[in-house]
Length: 85
Image 1 (tube, helix red, strand yellow):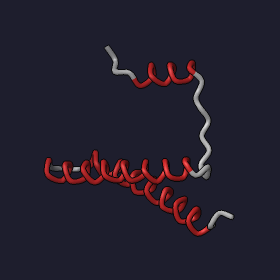
Image 2 (cartoon, rainbow, N blue to C red):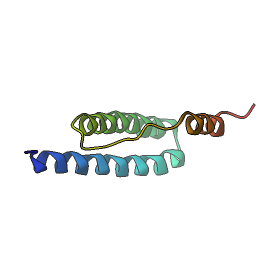
Image 3 (cartoon, rainbow, N blue to C red):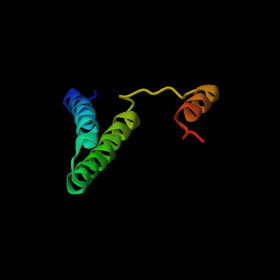
């Protein structure tokens, strides 16, 4: 049987890290000096790496199911986020 404490703890950590990322994403553009922006960016980068590690752990244990995107949807997303030429 799966230890629910591990699963619940990982899910809670994943949600907390997502919330922290939202906060950094809100405050980073408001940084008024290079030093502050650099600190916020470094912290945000560290959280994204940690979040992905937790996500991969949940996924590898079968606790976070993901569905592969269709090729057409991937191409559409790429086009919508491509820099304007």
